[in-house]
Image (cartoon, rainbow, N blue to C red; front, side):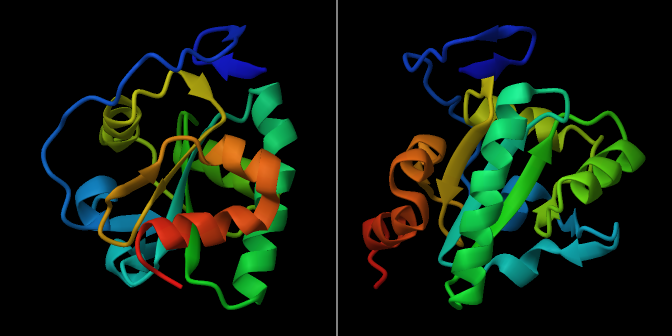
Length: 172
């Protein structure tokens, strides 16, 4: 089960991402700065050396997100402890910065987040045709799409999904 951005339902895999301007860097996707779990700004360029970046679309009010987040947290911890070139960027449908940071704190999210406002959240949701959350889109360090089905990959393979994602971009 997924949460639709308005109500709950099953996902519709027939929707394709919206063709938008070409992406050549993660800064093209996320803007110049992200927020860390403490609310400090971090230059997006600091994660452009990552081989795999998971873009996590979710909402604090979504029960399906609350069920998926612990799996993603576990995979994130395992991969980062193993020194894997991996990062998660949260794209939350939180209304404001305080709400976003409170949610990140409550869920023990140690990854980065797109700041609310400024239209980036909506632009990313449009780019990847996000209709249901949680959605996990996986890209490389240049912002090239690896998969739109990261959530399903993690549900089936756990941290082993990283190896498939890395292999698809020629990594080892």
